[in-house]
Amino acid sequence: MNPVSTHAAHGWRRLRGEPASRALLALLLVLALGCVFHSDGAFFKAGTHRDALRQASVYGILACGMTLVIISGGIDLAVGSVLALAAVLFSLTTIHWGWSPWLAIPFVLTVGAACGLASGGVAAGWRIQPFIATLAMMVFARGLAKTVSGGMKVSTAVQQADGAYRYVDVPGVFRGIDSRVLGGNLSVVTLILAVCVAVGWVLLARHRWGRQLYAIGGNEEAARLSGVPVTRTKLFAYVASGLFAAVAGLCQAAQEQQGDPEAGIGYELTAIAIVVMGGTSLMGGRGGMGLTLLGMLTIGYLEKILSLNAVPEASRLMLTGVIIVLAVLAQRRRRG
Image 1 (cartoon, rainbow, N blue to C red):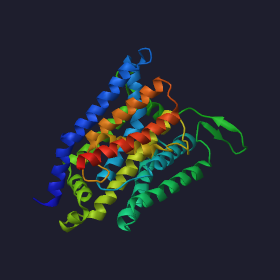
Image 2: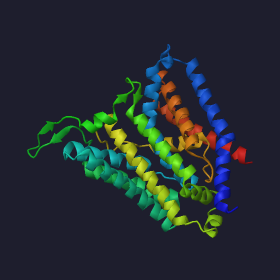
Image 3: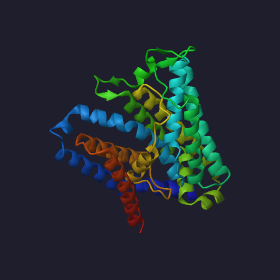
Image 4: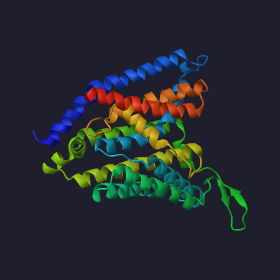
């Protein structure tokens, strides 16, 4: 059996085995925590779970792209900044310039993919460490978002030539993305997350490119010697990550009804925490979208429980950092 098939099979065995069990156990423990600290029964209401999924969906979409990159042995620190850039461009084109959604959405997605292409080109093509390459893109995309927005939030207040402001209606596409279906019990943003997870799962589980990602993450040199187009495969992973980040930016803008150039700060930390919590290895070569979905539910419900019990945001951020360390330590012990 060639290295590509070997690593792919190994990745799926790990997905069905111990990592999935650990991720599911973590989710069950968080849900049990919510049953204990239910905030006067708020945790048992259907609206709480609907809102928890809605709030976690943007992070989950980012984590879908992050999963692809991490399985290949890389990292993408730029997803939060690309999200902000996408949110600003989406708001600018639809609210201020009056573009049709059929033109604005492909434009924003193309910009997100281009950011991923630039990061991947530097990391895979020029063989610069992914940490450095995506750190540079994180700074660049954030600066570009502030430049095109003039350093201000792009909202329904449109400045006229004489300096006065005219308020316009929120575009219909914003209301559509931020709406609910099934009698108000499911957010459209959550459906978009489900589509992203499904697409990522198909790419990893049913496409040759996915098997190549596992092989590169497991042993890049062996993959290269077996004929895997390493540079192109890794490049596509970063393009996909940029594309997912742009989708998350569309959802973020619709939820906030504006494009904020400061949006997404720290989101890359949460996306990494979701991927690691699910059990995808930071060393590459092992993991999957199913694990990431479990990690997203765990982090999302934990955030919701902390919010219901009025835990300060600063404490939540510190807890996220601790979770990352504990999850990585658990992976190391499992490898040992």
